[in-house]
Length: 255
Image (cartoon, rainbow, N blue to C red):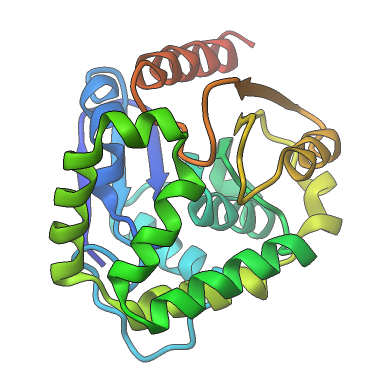
């Protein structure tokens, strides 16, 4: 597993989404490492982490994180997960509650319902045609039209860079892991402070799904971004989410 540890203080463990890497968290890591120990990971087959030969499941991703924390001699963490990373955070918190201070769930789902199953199957279909087809399908799903229009050149360059090392097999395995994930009946077991961040126009994890998750997690609060789809860390939202996280962790500390 490829990972990066920076800073000192209470540990924050960041978990990226399908097809991404620990680089996704660059802005937040740079601005939080002065007060916290920042741990970022590449999930199996993502970024610079090897895929291995095990069947990919959400449980396996969470077990990998436990192994990493044991190696780092860290007993307890605050988890921050985006999309697929949020499902790993949910799984981790439910299976290892003694290891978790808090949860931040960004554009996350507790199970693949009928709608999401169709979306994930479309991910798999485009991945079978190659990473570039998947990327072209994904971008309009995760970013608002104005963001795409304003960043056309950057998005094309990003596609070219990501396609060089994209592990399609790993991404299909991650998609299958999401399809088989279901902890909806266990959400009430989560008792740690939880922050749910959602995009109003999310076309992958629909707003109703995230609102129901909020209702079932007892100590959760929810913030909806009126200017976002699935990917929340865009433009001015970077600074806003940074401040939201700082306030969230301060509130926990003061309780």
